[in-house]
Every structure is written in structure tokens, then in C-alpha cells.
Image (tube, rainbow over all chains, first blue to last red; front, side, top):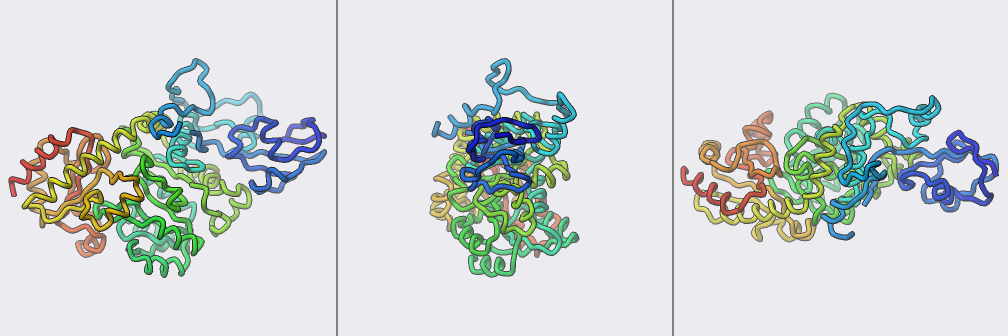
Amino acid sequence: MKLLINGESQELAAGQTIGNLLVLLNVESPDMVSVQLNGEFVERASFGQAQVKDGDAIDFLYFMGGGSRA
Amino acid sequence: MSGFSTRMIHGQPAKQDAHGALRPPVYDGVAFEFASSQDIQLTFEGRKPAHSYTRISNPTVEYFEQRLAAASGAVGAVATASGMAAISALVLALGSAGSRVVASRYLFGNTASLLEGTLKPWGLETTWVDMSDLAAVEAALKAGACMLFLESISNPQMQVADLRALSALARSAKVPLVVDSTVTPPVGYRPKELGVDVEVLSTTKYISGGATSVGGAILDMGSFDWKQSPKLAPWAAQAGPLALLVALRREVQRNLGGCLSPHNASLQTLGLETLELRVRASAANALEAARFLAGHAKVLSVDYPGLKSHPSHALAKAQFGGIFGGILSFSLGGRAACYSAMDQLRLIRRATNINDNKTLIIHPASTIFSEFTPAQRGQLGVPEGLLRLSLGIENAPDLVEDLAQALEVL
């Protein structure tokens, strides 16, 4: 499926959730990232269940700064 | 890595240094370059993880924030230019004209002045409460508040707040519990476990390495649902549990401009590595000094939670992991007696700071609280005869000897 991720078109295997994408795309500091799916913010608790489909636009929004890092 | 010092010494930065430097370099510059116009646009929109301008974020400051958040068990941290900058930014992030802070009546003088002098004319109200009076706190919260604000141990009054009890009241009222934990670093203290929602710190004190540099921080424990905050609800709709941190980074702290300098951040990261050693050493010195003063004929009273006679000894022991802090207060009766004893000191320095490596003494009524009237100082728990002693990490016998010779003048 084709997704628009932070403004860039990317081809990925179907059947992904937001939670999968954070890992698959190696998103930096995933605990400190907010996610928009087609312009709507996704609750963090729903990342594992939120399915994405062909043509969806996903935006990862970064906090830039001090997330806990032990 | 379970030990506090081990974690502080061996925690890694998010990105490895290109040269393998064991201590991350100081990124002293202001601006960061981008490969394309689109990259800089994405960064401004928050859609690319990159630093753009040091007032907003900086790699060296980010590393300090990450180490500090890990130390406290926080979700994340925003570093500021000073402890007062942290408090100012937090109050402005949570409050607005017409909203109300429920605050301890025993706050640091400058914090009380910020709320009562600086922000009151802008429409922010403060209700001052004795935090040991839980019924009064509950009643004040029922009237609505943007935050419940206190210090873990007030000084010079040395009042120990029952954080679990206050957290229960705050949760019930859907108000975040904000604690200034400057004097109780997270060596034995676990703010999140006690129900603290947000910590503010003057990192100038213990964390800087013993007064090496000025700094502050706001730490979000991730326990408060920011949808319940009238001011942050719009941010919560965007950023969920990160609402406070994102609001600070993207608006309040960015606009106020009180950023921590990269040099100070580097010094303070180094300070975290030796924090446990210094906290334990100063607390041991404080206990020695408190015991000596408590047994001295010229000393009317001593307030130190480490003394078994202190009314909050058991509470402090449980809350702070047996580490009672490096500050004590003692009374000599009046201002003249305080000045006489202070002026005799040879080793202990007359200076306005706490948790320095050097032991410091001050007469709070004539300095930190001098802008208040004697009646107000009485209400604030700062009588004329009170001295505050902040113990450093020198050898205890030298400090006791200095106190003993100074008290001989009385």
C-alpha cells in the first residue's frame, strides 16, 4: 500500500498499525512522538490498534528534547 | 543498571558521537543548517526530528533533559534558564487570567513574589494554604484551581509535605500536583511513586554539581490527564499525554525565551554524575550540625527533618528514602544575635544559595524575605531570629568547630 508519511510517499506492506509503523520506520524517540492519521490525532493508547490503509496520510510530530533516556 | 549513580554516569545520548567521545561535546552554536527548504519546513512543523535554533532546543540541552528525566522517572523534561524560569513557564502554561493557584503558604520568597506581585496584576489568583492542614487544602481545591503547588521541604520553615495525601486530594479535584523538589533530588526520593504530577527544579543547586551554574527544569511524570486542564485541553487534543511538554516546547517556553545555555547544560549533566555522592555527604553533615546545634545552650530551636524530634521525621524518612536534605534552620532569638553569630563564622560562608559544595548561611528575614512586612514574614514562618544553614560537603568536624566558635560570641 502507498502511504504519505510526513509529506513523502512510501510503499509499505499492507496490514500495518501505527504502532508497527513506529518500529518499521525507525521513528526517533517513539515514546515522545505524536501521530496524526489523515489530519486527526491518534490517542497513544490506540497506536497498536489503529490500522492504516492505502492512501492514508500519517504525520509523526516530534517533541525535540528531553524524553526520559536511562 | 539499577543504581542511581551508575545510571547517571553511563546513560547514553540519543545519538552516538562521531568520534566516540565519552563525554558528549558542547553544541555551543545558535542555528542548525538544513539540506533543503522542505527539511526546514518539516522541522518547523514538528514533522522532522531536528534542532533548528538553540532557544527552542539544542543537542547538549536535550542530553541533559534526557538524563534528568531518567533520574526522576519522568516522561520528559524541559530545561530552563533557572528554577524561577521553570516556575514562571509552568504557571503561565497552566494558568491564565481568572484561574487560581492553590499554593503552600511557605513558598520560597521569590516564588511567592512571582505569584503575589508579578502575576496577580495579570489576573492570576493565588490561595495560600498551610499544606499540613489537609482539610484546608481540600476546601481550597474545591473552589477550582489550575495547580496545587508546594515545595517538598519548605525552607527556612522545614515543613515536610505529605505528598501521598496531597496527591489524593489533587486527583480527586482533577488538579495537577506540582512540587518544587529542588532540595530533595531523586536519589532516595521517587516523586512519581508519591503521586507528584509535575516537578519543577532549580538545577542550580544540587544538580549543577554544587552551584557551578544557573539552571532549572520542568518534569512531567506522565500521571496527569491534561484533557482535565482548561488551559492545556487544546494541546491534549493534539499531543495527548505529552501536552504539557509540547505546549512548553512549542509555545510557552519558546516564547518566554528562558532557555538553558548549552554550557550550563553540560556542567549540569556532569553534576548528575556526582549527585548521589554530594546529596548523601551534605545530608550527613546536616545531621551532624543539627545534633550539635540542638544540644547547644544558646540555640533556642533547630528544625531539621533528620532529627528524631522533628514532627515530620517519620514522614520525611519514608518519602525521601532516609535522606533528609542538606538544609536546616535554627533560632537564636533575634536579628542582632543572628548577625553576631554569622559575622563570627570563619569557614561557613555568608551567601544566598543552597546545596552548594560549600556550607552557606543566611538570615532569611533580612534577605530572601526582605520585601515582605514583619507581619507577612510572621505568616510566612520567617521570624527575625531564624538562620538558615545549607550544608556543603566539607568534613563535618570542621563545620561543627566553626559553629561552636561563632556561637561563643552570644
